[in-house]
Image (cartoon, rainbow, N blue to C red):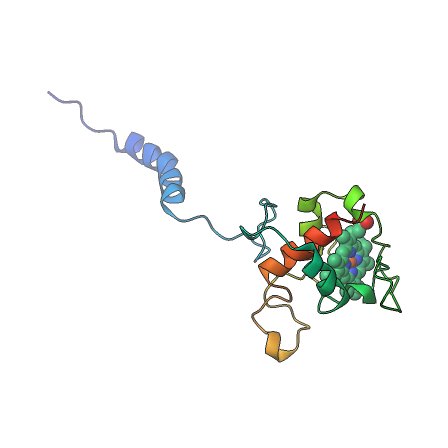
Amino acid sequence: MLKPISWGAVTVALALTLPVLVQAASPKKAPERGYYDVSRLAPLTDQAGDPVNGRKLAAGKGLCLSCHVMPIPEQADHGDVGPDLAGVGSRLQPPELRLRIADPKVLNPDTPMPSFFKKDLNRLPPNLKGQTVLTAQEVEDVVAYLATLK
Ligand code: HEC
């Protein structure tokens, strides 16, 4: 005669394997902090960053000069809220630069530096709601520019 099934054992076995199965079946959830997966510091695009455009963005749309001294002498009035970025390409590797631009709040929740690649920031003008300040390619361009500051 077959041994009667021990339902207790079945329940225990299910309880142990079910979470694993469910996790394997469901797609990977986006990280809590939202838009940028900090465990993945690889380039955001396939196209290499353009340092010349990155320099333009730093002096223009990125507003980096309002807080940082940078080797961009043609523009006056560099701010000093953040550190001087001359030589930053020697201090930080591209993945570190990328994280600091994409979402510096990951490193320092109290930083005044904006997260340039995060959606739904609170203090954005209405026309930028749901968008990032810089596009993925623009982040790469700025990273490429900063990497030249040795
Ligand atoms: C509102 C001011 C502000 C703006 C705008 C700003 N930053 Fe910053 N940034 C800071 C501050 C302050 C720090 C110092 C680190 C911190 O607060 O966590 C910093 C740190 C950095 C660092 C790390 C430097 C180091 O030596 O460790 C980099 C790189 C950087 N910023 C790049 C940029 C770039 C590129 C832009 C423009 C796209 C920019 N920042 C715009 C305030 C700003």
